Length: 509
Image 1 (cartoon, rainbow, N blue to C red):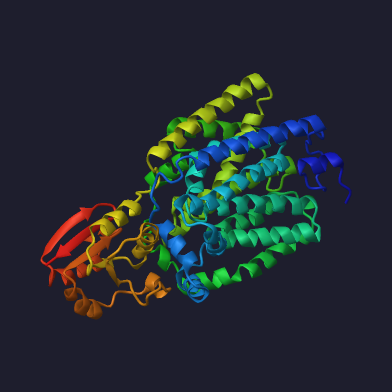
Image 2 (image 1 turned 90 degrees about the vertical axis):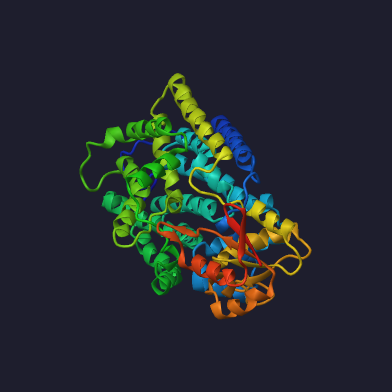
């Protein structure tokens, strides 16, 4: 089919006739857009690098570094046994660690992905709507506290966000121009998004479902075959989930209305009900003109809003439905839904054609979002962060030659080992559990304590440190913690808590 220049500039599938398309922008306007985007990205960089080391690595960040530091044999084994989720991030983190080991440098990898997401989301907003909307959504992303928070974490979330934005961008390009190159790129990026985080697969499902709402004449025949290639590419993920099950997520609790309310506040930027209401109003302004269209299949102009609604709500609603049988809802797993929310809000604000109306509206969003970001710098809003940096320093500064240390959760050793490698200390405690070999192996992540061996080893040391993380349950201490405490108290009668969060207890004879 022939495609007009204007329809290509708006990202409209070629078969759609009558879709409203903006006129091609001139060279001067393009330069202005580029300059504005550069300023927005620079502002995003300032917010993401600011105070990037103010907070200690938490449990999961320590695990990220420990996984990436494993030799290849143990690295592959731990991915297959437990940590296949985020495997793409671990693969990228491995070479990144060759150039630096500091907290700032390690977290800097997430900042790189986060900054790349700003122009990527601009391009997606321009393809779905126009350059005006693209700049607005880039500005919203740059100041969003939820985006800033996961830009400063040594985990895969900012990589997941970037790849999900690129997947949707390639999805639209494959609809507009279903060349083999565009389709291959879409399949590759979508598969990588799933390997960055399994829940990204819900976006791919939302994209597939969205085509059921688009006019059939607007859907080229070739892209309909892409889903099977994506399914084939991520089949190892399906095998891993089938063999492992939901074991790694067995600690997740069934969500209630409070958890959903908290998730809405986080996603909109950690500034409380005022910013949430502002987003609701902006999204309502975007969706209002198309609310009367009740037909199943619609033209491009209406379909793009349905696509964004599916991106925003389908992953959450599906997971909530599954959670009645097996709780799987964890707010940070739906971080990839943020671009859909921002795009809808930007589209609503872009309807304010007068700059005198748009400027104050955007200023309100930016001011409230910055308030949420400043609040995040002071205190986490979605995490009870244990201070592993200070806890490790406390243990190493007070340890004596011949001390021993145990961790009630095997992977609790990982953030301790990271800070131990930075701080160093003569006479560091001997690790009794988890401990298989001189170097950390994949078994140190997953193996259960050998109580018989520990019962023989513990009495050989005058002082034993016990490091507890997530030891409290609704009914008291978890069974592993109780067992370890009872085992130590058989030979060490005096217990002194020397640190909290994580809890560090020193037992002496």
